[in-house]
Structure formats: C-alpha cells, structure tokens
Length: 190
Image (cartoon, rainbow, N blue to C red; front, side):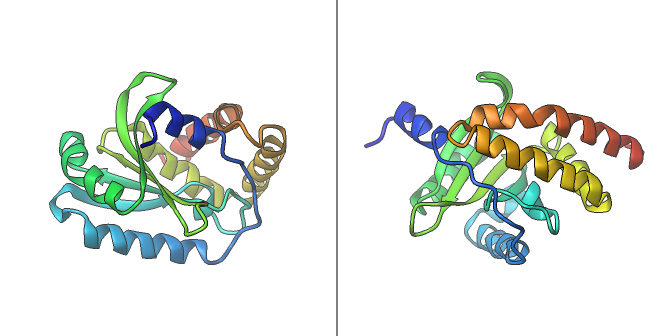
C-alpha cells in the first residue's frame, strides 16, 4: 500500500500541461456534479460549482475540471464522504488552505481517467472558506476577456518553466489571482 508521503510526492511531481479550451469541459463538470449528487449523502452537500480555468470559455487550461463543493460538516465529510470516493478510486488529501500546514483544512480529491490522468479536482469546503472568492475571479475573467488572455499567457509560460513543480507553478500565479480577485470583489460590490 502506498504511504501518504509517497502519494504526496507522486501527485506533486505530475506534469503540468496547458491545453486549448475544450467545449466538453462544462459537460464534464455537469456529469461529475450528477455523479457526486447521486453517490454522496445528499444531506451533507449544499451546492456544487465549476470554477478555475476550465470554467472560463475560450481560456487554455490544465485539462482538469475544478469543482467546489459546499458541505455542511468537515468532520462528517471525513467520516462519510471520504470512504465513498476513495472506494471509487479518487485520491484523497486533508489539505491546508494556505502553505504547508496552515489551517483551515479541507477535503480535496483527485479523480483520474482509465489512463491515470487527472480529470477532476474536487474541493470540499464550508461556506465560510475563502475558496468561494474564486467564483468572483472566474466571473470577472469571463466578463473581461483581455484579462483572461493575460492569465492564459502567464499560465502557459509558468507551465513551461515549472512543468514538474505544481507547488511553484501555483505560487507564481498567486499574485495575479489575488489582484484580480480583489478587483472582482470591488466590481461586484462584495
């Protein structure tokens, strides 16, 4: 059986590839949303949203559907949801929101296709987590295609420079994401 340390090393070393926008991404989200609502305890799920680059039309992205799931209880998620999704082959991590060990923590899952490639990232959080601000980022880029193209260029360049270093790739994008999210919150009067 794979140790947690080995699983983490394996997942962090997986290649980063940015591909052109695929019109199937919204369908893939809807299919996974239906699957989650069918197989998980309905009383724990509040809402499910498509976010990240695959949720922005015409934006090149890693071909991985990011899904944000609002859950009622993190403890019940660990007890009841984790076993279901692990049994179905999802990788599970109890993940910090910031840095290596900075709370709050949340449940994060990776779904893969039959070839072992990532297809979905599922982030299960409570309503008060900062993750929900990512919907403002998504919506703002949809409304501002020039900024979306700027983000695409940044991601493409970073994916070439850090193709096997997901942590650095993500950190290097963070200034852009934070800046645009703050602009979006002002724009949407949040």
